[in-house]
Length: 264
Image (cartoon, rainbow, N blue to C red; front, side, top):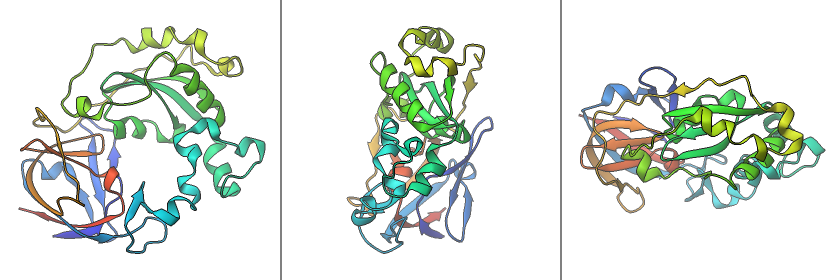
């Protein structure tokens, strides 16, 4: 029996990817639980910022923290709104400079479809693993989050910037040549970003997930509606646990929920 507040699983880029669930006092190698029955029980809430037992609003934060903490600034979801390079504060300039003024990658990833996205260079390939991508390629490497954001805005006029999580979890993969897809984007990159285009870097990252059985039609587990659930773990992909009865559980989407986890 384990207990702790959920945060997104730690990952290790291996073949297949290794997943670890980290609680305050426990460290669980989730791959070792494949084909075993797991029982999840909701206990309470724990905001990732104030650590109080208050209902989670979004991204693991209670409502007040979501609108106050620098870790939930709008620039995180919309990088084109980043302003630290202008020395302008959103919520906490020191934090924003630390996060925004570092190398960022604009990439293409193949999960449900070919999508464009942004991540800090330090988060390669973790970001792609969290999205459940099977392949990824870097398009540009820029010195700050703002430049990555305006590039993403320009490129998503020509392709999606979203992952269809249901198609990703049922493993409905399309055929795509990421190198060819990347080569088609050169004309759409903003002029101020063109010098950062990675024209000689055509490396494709391949990602393999520990999945024994994909669901045919996914049923999402919501701990607010179903505070107790038991099922046989059949796979892990993205930040989802996949169970034998087609139930899927989004660990990252449940950050801040304190649970008991029992393994049979």
